[in-house]
Length: 107
Image 1 (cartoon, rainbow, N blue to C red):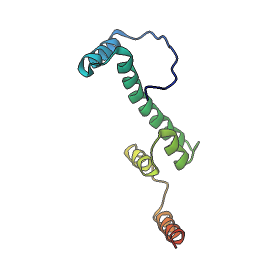
Image 2: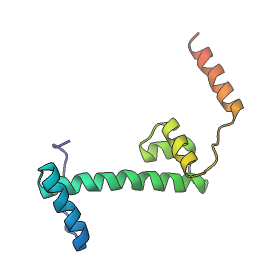
Image 3: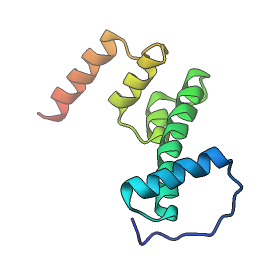
Image 4: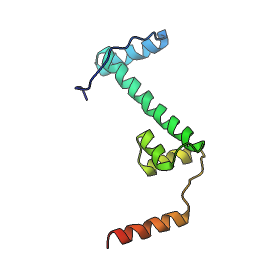
């Protein structure tokens, strides 16, 4: 939100990146700081996903933890893994057992 705690950070950016930021400010009619935050947020979401997928693929984290790290649901994480051709860790039996567990929980 707009009331978040912030800290001033200085960075040197290539001219091409500055052009993209300027373009965003004009198109969205927002200031440069807001444009940069929006662009950075998009990149950070992608970075979080890539990092979580990589950690999962290397066996450094579980599927659930990878989903948390990426900010995704378990199903969204499984879709992301499928898109990257990383095998789904859950078998048909896992799904059946999950359904049985849900049925027990609702009784």
